[in-house]
Image 1 (cartoon, rainbow, N blue to C red):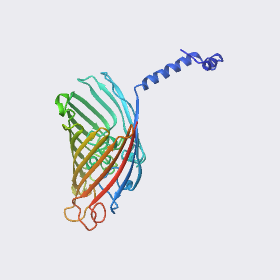
Image 2: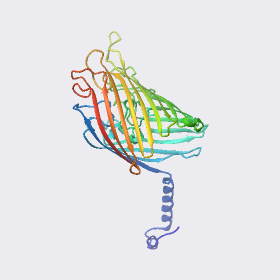
Image 3: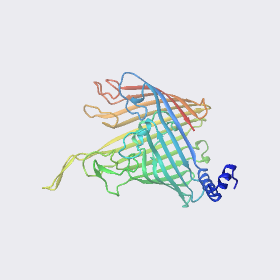
Image 4: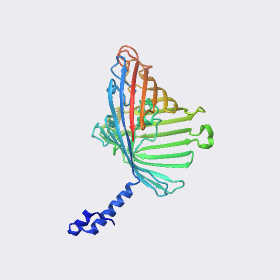
Length: 411
């Protein structure tokens, strides 16, 4: 044990004991050893967006909607503290994703606190059990298991999110088990409290009507990835998943006591092409949501009567083309969605429904180290709404056009 002169002086004066110093150093050493495998990372995401045209609203946008148009924005700051699993059979770790800024409101940290500029995106403990090739088990709050795109804009081909991203759940509180059967085949399955976001939320059948303890949200997925032996097709991936369950109080509606689940089905594929740097991808999302009717119970007759619950639906298809050459990266997303009235906007008239087409082109040039710097042109077009004030983007306006500049620093 090597001590400095100040410590020796305090020990000589009887202020401290050498034994306590040794114990403190040992505790400090243990803490430093535990932290040595912990990593700190994150990013700062900013943007400037301009909307062309006279429309007052934008639909089909997740984080670049009307409130962010025609100005400069701090989108979100993310801080990740993580100790990943190692190669050991009994490996253990954890991960915490913290969000700061306007986009954090998508991930409410507790039920009932409302929208805030702080959120816990993920916070889980993960352990590996020596079953077969290794069974990884997450317990806590984790991202949804489905989707072509993710919350982190810098990890997506484009800055703005797709229609499909908005049809998917975002986070769950529960347990998720993952298993890699082969180098190219893996599975995951989990059980969570609720379908929609909200840490520690509990499922509800309707407003003020908690569900039974056994009514949880269930999810499963499968991934197929082309190994090195596939030659030019190596890196190709096929993914499919499903999530089904009840919402918590922030997403519950209606007054009936019948179960009313939300179901999301997703399938996605990415295929590299023979030309170096060129790849195509496609994604399909389907969501069915129960729209509860109001029923009444007559105690004299024992008959329940009133409206039956119905189901709203939404589909979204996206096709991606990306090309990367040295510091340049080009990405184009063409997408289509059709949905029940009220999913994206409300339409009056006979047989109302929602139908949109969008095309987004993004150009990225890696000018600075650790920085994503890109410009994006997005066009959304309404295919269903009629003239006369019912178009979603403004009075008689069937188009929404915007230009965005996105700057992200990753650390």
